[in-house]
Length: 338
Ligand code: SAM
Ligand code: SF4
Image 1 (cartoon, rainbow, N blue to C red):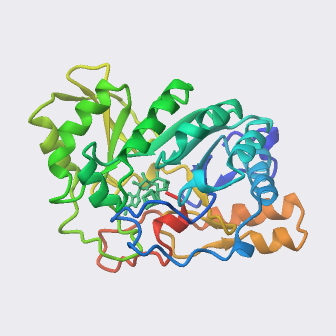
Image 2 (tube, protein in one colour):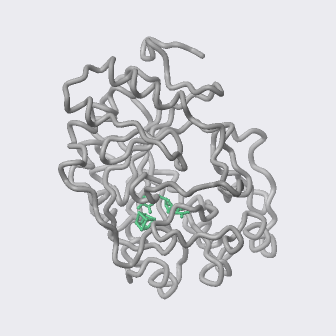
């Protein structure tokens, strides 16, 4: 591994020689939508405020990751990161770091039309937004909120302010929006958004996910291939989770993130920090490593970096969803950071 001056003491390397350089920072577990595959209609018991890292604490941990641990990309997520009041300032402080990490935001885009300009000005590079349908009634059915128009305004604003390429993540649910895959792709291409379908994962708070009813990557291809010709877009996708395809010869592409049926754990370069200061070395990890306590107890950067390295070193080789002994993590996706 290349040891730069920024990774003295070592980067985030695990026992299988994978190096984590992509940090996903969850800024809140709260959300203003209730996507069926993520959160129950009544919401969840939110993290107590005193357990959530302050803006200064989040920025300190990001600085340690970038300056001591070789992290080169920081993605802000949640819950819904746009509901975090300090978001723009956190982005500004992150993009001011040396070396400057790439930055992105994963959002449901509600209210993005108001903040896209400030986020761009703070240095944010890109936005990934979630959108599973372009039909208002299906949107309301999936998210339990009648807000499709606001999401579409948010996406337009992201594009206008150069937070591009704007990528759209879509989850297909059987009998709900799986028949709309081609329609969504056509719309995304017409609006210059890069669409990626994500297989539904066992990370919903309700534990309703079932392997035998989830919509698989093969089925997604089936839905698309009736209307489009798809050809592989990348010879080697590296650590990117999405398999990308040229649509009708390109230049438009579509991605499929087949976390369940075609896992890519062997190439994973991600590590996660929850809003309450726990490092998770995998979305599906059953253990977490607490950085908040040492941080609040006055630990110096070197000690926190050492704890972070140890947390990543023990990463398992894969998530094992297809193993009969698989156990869903205790925290749902919204509290981990997707
Ligand atoms: N609220 C933001 C959003 O929706 O983009 C950020 C957090 S959300 C948890 C991040 C991503 O996780 C979204 O693209 C969402 O579609 C996806 N997601 C949530 N639950 C999922 C599940 N059970 N399986 C697959 N993807 C899921
Ligand atoms: Fe909220 Fe994102 Fe979960 Fe939907 S997927 S409920 S927008 S956190």
